[in-house]
Image 1 (cartoon, rainbow, N blue to C red):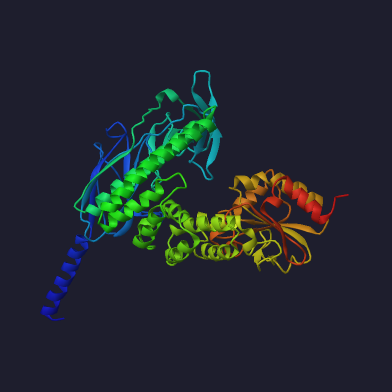
Image 2: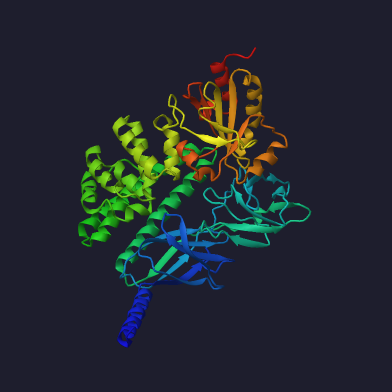
Length: 552
């Protein structure tokens, strides 16, 4: 290579590197607790918004200060977490022109219930996560005995805050969940395979201080968005906390009704202020924020049809704003007529995005209420094809079992599995033809699956001589888990197979398995004759009796 070429290559690499550095956005700031002071522990995470990924997570210093960077543009999130506090998720729209900025956050403390109904300890030391109920003691504390082979117990408590899992008052350290969920697990050493965990309500710190966000940036749109988001989420949090608190009171229904009516009056006045601002505001982005706020803040059904038309004209169906919180576009679409909504919504769902699954589910449920078969079929096909593994996609399948492959009257999908007892014995839909058989998707780590064992054993004994068989398909981690399980209380004397990759397997996809237990009853012709609730608990015996006849 010539010298000139080497020099050219060097400068190309150098300036490319400088270009990469120039694209980095640096975020600095301070994370504090509800009292305005640094917390025991605090973390800041940044990642792809609503896609479930965390790119960077770091612990703030003793003064609550942090600095992190990202080369991402578009929609990202910053998550702020702290011990004994509710985490705060702040979406940020980063443009190439955004530049570095400073974001200071003061978190809201957990909102502890004054009237505790039930407290549960969730043990994260083992998989699956075990749950145990605390017992109230005469001194006002709550305690629970935990038995575990682990040397250290990692736990959180459910039932102290309506919306969050909280750390316990008995702890030797706190373990932050690196997945960015904002959970801090309390850590306690275990001796002799057991430990008693005590919760002392007197040690809980109560605070009514709201979360606070302040930003220093040259990007006026970013500053406006952060203020908008802080206002919206503060309103939603206050409404949820107040509603939950009132609902628990003795005359909760009356108090809640009164609160909602007052809230409607307040939000109606705010909506008038928003309309006035819209008449004066010229900036397109600020106008979009005002329009969204108009719909999100309302708890009543009254709205201005002219504002709906403005929103349809000025807010692009493909704006990143709609992806931040699905409830925003859901509230907006509620105010649109079917004619107004159709074209807009079709544009919105044209490009797949993880965040759109929940909106599709809401529209699917609305179509169901309206008995609109055309829209039901249209939205169901999209959500089960594009978002099959999302929570919304799974709920859609449960809501409309008659539309899926696993529906009453449908032919069972072809399958072929090796027997757990003898790998040379292949079990498939052909070998089982001519029998009534129950396919039971399960796992030894699945609590509800184990709860069905008594019913399964009793009914197998009743109907095994009536041309009836059971095929249990396990989603366990390894085949040995099933073998060890069957050597104890439940022998499960029927057909078994281990399904490698579980929910990610091709078999799970063909059978549309989104949760377990999943029982499916097939007739001798290979047709599905019952599923789910008709084959759970006492209903299993009733269904089999109806189909196979009463046992003599």
